[in-house]
Length: 267
Ligand code: NAD
Image (cartoon, rainbow, N blue to C red; front, side, top):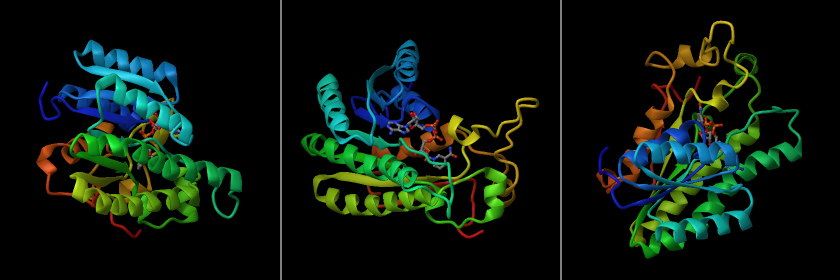
């Protein structure tokens, strides 16, 4: 157990799985009171129980980040539970399904709504609490998808990735810089993280070979283009997020930092 987030209240959206779950455990180990905001109650409660069993403090609140009314209620409940909010990690998101030129407008809207609208709704609801706390830190979840290209071959290797995901994460990056500009005078820092291939349920869904347990999602494009060997894991992203919400990064804002084993922007 450390004390880098001692006394802080941290909200993590999508904190019931993958990168969000790993970050929830790490924040709790560093002394934060963690609010896990996500849709699936069974998963969320399980993470809450696991963190408490480790001696940490966590509360799960059910919430769809794409539903503004639910977000407002969940953030109010979070602030009431622990007496305020100091840290926000907008992590919930994802996107796959049909890819251009066969994307349906309903799927496009769904992906944008979760990744981009969700980031706005949660940030806006949490903002007055960060101001009231005298400052705070927000980290938004982007992806290397925001800045790199794609190709039909990539879709063959990795399955379908939609233009909605690319657009949503690029939008998150723009929102990060915008929010950082607004937050500076209130001592609210806003940064983003751009993971590459991280082994989580979402990234490996349908791509891990059951027979040999191999990380087939990683084989191919990422393996070739990374400077470091092997895929990343949730803890690799969680460590960066911890730095960005701790006082150690007090002079850093408006930045979007890659955690991707060193991949070039253009492939
Ligand atoms: P994951 O599926 O394990 O976790 C995603 C979480 O978001 C889940 O808890 C899910 O319930 C939650 N979520 C999704 N839609 C939601 C909604 N509308 N409301 C509330 N919660 C919702 O996947 P992950 O890989 O840990 O993904 C976390 C974030 O990291 C996502 O934003 C994803 O786009 C991003 N990302 C992942 C990778 C990767 O390789 N794994 C790479 C770049 C970016």
